[in-house]
Image (cartoon, rainbow, N blue to C red; front, top):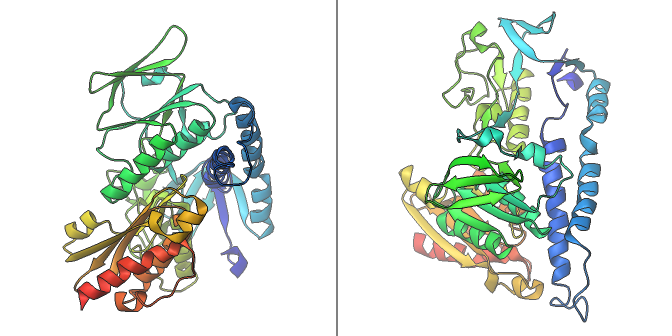
Length: 440
């Protein structure tokens, strides 16, 4: 907006740039890359990169090196460079917590700012489950885990979503004994069951103990200061540290929404229309996790572009059918669109086809573990509505399916696409041809 000559104020109480650069995406992917590199080194002789297995240093020393790299890439959680960038482009930066006083008016401490249009991009906060004794146990949120230099000898992770799975694999690579507890019957709820089972197998192969279908009922602390969790199946888990990864909730509490007659959804999310305008409001907009729609950095960036276009006089409408979802384990889980079960719930006449990615030539040359690709199609329209994979580099080649879903490309056309040999993206060809044949 400032680049287009508009008068803009940005109110931020913590860090300019939000969670992603400092305590979320960047540090987590940095520590995961170090973990994956260490695991690759363990396979060096197997992959022909050495005649004998290399000697690696102590896990704790290696973790310290990984933390140094993590903190360097996340600017040591210092937002001064991003603050200079935003003010250098003409934005007035106001440090503090904003609260809506009334239509067209924001309070920040003792100061007041007037506005024509207000964009709420307050993000989300960790959900702390109501577990008896949890508040006295040694816990971290994911933000704290990705800021701390400490490597616990043992970890209990509460939650089997993307954050819990990524942290589990990262710490396990550096010798931490990790137990992940998920109350649902599978990891990453809402994803295809076979793909989720593949992710569970990946984590178990990484040394993570996974407990599905059980929950923590209470927690206490041992004399040595460790956490001891009682499980719903009667078992117990003891760990030096607990990471709370039970999800996040939109951060809409105490920002004065009642002053403009806005009531968030029960989840805390702001209800927006297709233009990312808060429902019932002419000059109130929202983007990012606070909307509860596409809680990823790329989802927030997309909504920000929609809001900006509309504030500049356009009429842009968001389309969330093809927003990718990724768990950055090794191999990664990547998906887009609807899983088969969700497609059926939506009343779609579903066709599915799958491919064992481990049977591709590239898997053989790379010494990659088996993987799986599942495609979900709409029989009536002859287009893909979903795709999911647990396979090497799937976070990159899932984009082919994202484009196909977004553009509603006919499966008959997709089945004619030629992929370079040998690549993992070749995995699309057989299931697409199978779907095309069944649609004739």
